[in-house]
Length: 386
Length: 166
View 1 (tube, helix red, strand yellow):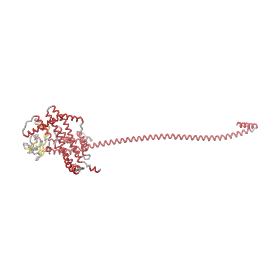
View 2 (cartoon, chains in turn purple, blue; view 1 turned 90 degrees about the horizontal axis):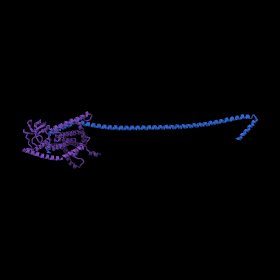
View 3 (cartoon, one colour; view 1 turned 180 degrees about the vertical axis):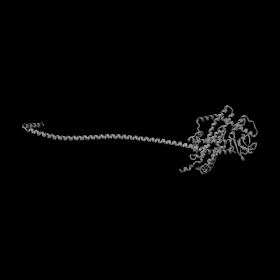
View 4 (tube, chains in turn yellow, purple; view 1 turned 120 degrees about the vertical axis):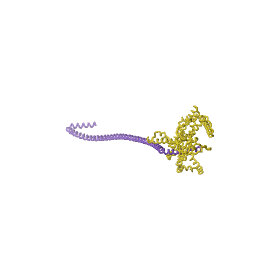
């Protein structure tokens, strides 16, 4: 990723120019947080106090952001708070709870009503967006210690917003890359069409990520996984920056499943040398080997765990920061504050595009690094022979 | 950590794994393999083309060097031949000149010798002729002189006078 000197300097200057605003905005956000906490407490205590207007906007923004970063059971593009009307479409709900329940998410009416299916009642909790089994009136009893509801959570295989977006990303990838693959045959070995944009990235992943980290000998068998994961993460990161309100790579379950695949591939394709380095580290004194074994074994799990957290935290934090700054526009409601906040959110969006590429690259790069360590050939013996 | 674990959603995990693994397998068959093969083929093709171009260039250079060498050799040969011819010509001229000179000399010598011998022969002949002639003259004179007494005496006197003059 090459950024010429001038725009970078411009971005830096813009960031520095916005610094006072940022510190100001942070305090605003904190106070908003505190105020919402207070409001929250007030509601749970059952003393409903009337909110003053600015607090209301702030808590609305916070609620909106909190809601956005979670998965959702319907695809809402926008909503009108005045009329309570939602613009978007419902998605199918598939629940396994002593039998299969399939119904449309419109039954929940965005969490406002209790859905009935085959004699069981379900509702969506406002706080975590998850489906709980309830009684006919939709009572949710919260656990005092954990703060999570005590109600039964049925196995939820619903086609949620995130499932729709990963499916859309998968379809788009399949379309783009199969058309790229076909264009080679049609055009005499030279790419044509829309997939052509991605050919340099494919070559980059092969030449700069796979071959240096895995080695010329083994890299071929990992290429499919590395390329798929790079473009999958990249597409979903970019999707997350569109106004569609998708947050797939900022969802822990998604990053967990990606990381566990890297973990499984690393350990299932690992050679004897890899395990030897974990349990009986060569080239160090024997007592040290015993101490090193549990540390190395822990590392096996920490590596994919760090992959999971890194991608999740980067995208999650990016969404929160970006949406908070966009929300500031509505809090300031003055032409100077709002336009400054607009400028900042614009700059941050550009930064987020960089982050989208960077995180996809880092995930792929580290996966390749782990694969490389799994198939690394034994060097010590080779040296002894010479 | 508790919050993170609580966020985990098994249904979403199931769909994600299903879609993602399916995507890997589908893309492997329909996209990555043909794309990587095509890119590899193309790169190999470019490499080969560059190599053959380099080879052709090398060959061309060799050919040119060969041509130059052959040209130089031919030129040298021509020069050598010309030189040889010139030398030969000069040698022939010198030789023929020498021979002609020698021949001429020889002929002159021969001619001289012939002239000498002819001269000698002519001299000898002349001598005999003169002696015969002088003898016949002497005989005739003697016959004449001796025919009268006076003329005999006159002759003797004259001869004596000649002897004196000598």
